[in-house]
Image (cartoon, rainbow, N blue to C red; front, top):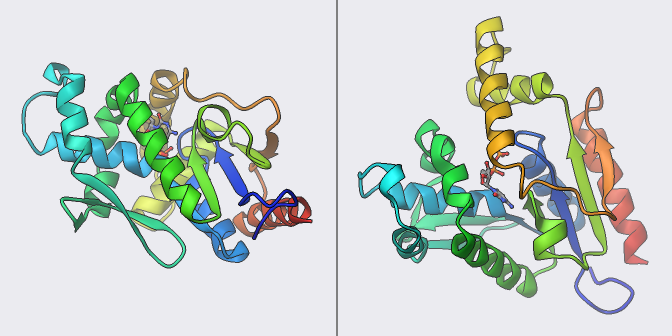
Amino acid sequence: MSSSNGMPLVVTIDGPAASGKSSTARMVAERLGMRHVDSGALYRGVTAARLQAGDPPDLWTEQSVLDAARRVTLVPGETTFEPRIDGEPCDAEIRGEAVTAVVSLVAKMAHVRAWVNATVRTTSAAHEAVADGRDMGTAVFPNARLKIWLVALPAERARRRVVQRTGRAPTAEELEAETLELESRDHRDREQTQPAADALWIDTNGISQDEQVGRIVALAEERRS
Ligand code: CDP
């Protein structure tokens, strides 16, 4: 798909933790025949690679994290790009609690952000892309033709995250613990989690994922013509 000016169409989907960015972006990419690029998976991949050295995160230098980043690559799948560490699949590892607990520390490092942003841009240049994260519509693709900002209440985001992890409805304790974790990550990530001035907001409370995906696909198709 190309936009009217002949440039490859880029759609950005940003929002806070567990707002459904990645699953939405993957489905939108599938429906439009584009490729999904998940910037959060890169931050997570770098964090997982650095954790393998075993020393405590508060002693990590930015250079040592950048050295770990060199071991992380994005390998094209059918509709998405999968992160690898030393060429090995690492999906379970990057979604685990150890990574989630320290990824925001890594995401604060300016050179790491520059590396992720350059990797996302290079990957997206070769394929029409749906890029998701927190700053895709601001720092990475300020000229994207379609920018989406997803919002959902913390309790709803926590519910979705537990269902994703366990495959069942959360208990009250799980919901409370997950909401606290998400709110503290929102706080740590607040600087880079900003909607672009020209982003379209989609409130996902009370709408199904299909409906959410359908709205974004329709908007992207409008931009196509
Ligand atoms: O899906 P979830 O919101 O849990 O997180 P993610 O998209 O996998 O991103 C994991 C972490 O990477 C976030 O908590 C941020 O610290 C960082 N991140 C970022 O700073 N900028 C981005 N564009 C994407 C992720």
